[in-house]
Image (cartoon, rainbow, N blue to C red):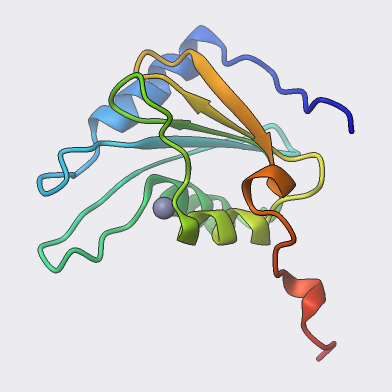
Length: 140
Ligand SMILES: [Zn+2]
C-alpha cells in the first residue's frame, strides 16, 4: 500500500482554518473544531462545530461537507481537521461515515494540532475500514 500524499496547507489556509476553528460555537464541550476540505476543483470549504443545548450539535466536518454539497461538488480530495490542542482530534464515528460518502481511495484526512501543524494523516480505509457505502446498496 502506498503512503497517502497530501499538500501541506498554505499559510493563508492555515490561518483561515484556525480562524474558523476559533469561530466555533462550542459553549458546552469547550472543544472548538475546524475543518477545511479541498475538492477536485481546488475549491476550499470550511466548517466549524455548532453545538446546541440539546447536545445534538453539528460537527465541523459536517459543516464543511454541507458547504461543499451546497456548491454542487461531491468529491473530497483532502480534509484537514483542527482541534484546540495538541492531541489528535480525529473525526467522530458519524463524521467518518459522512466523509466516506464523498471520499475516494485517494482521499486523505489530515489531523492537525492546535497551531495547524500536521499530526497524523489517514486514508478513508484507515479511518473507516471495510466501510458501508453507496455501492453496498442495491441499484435503484
Ligand atoms: Zn463528527
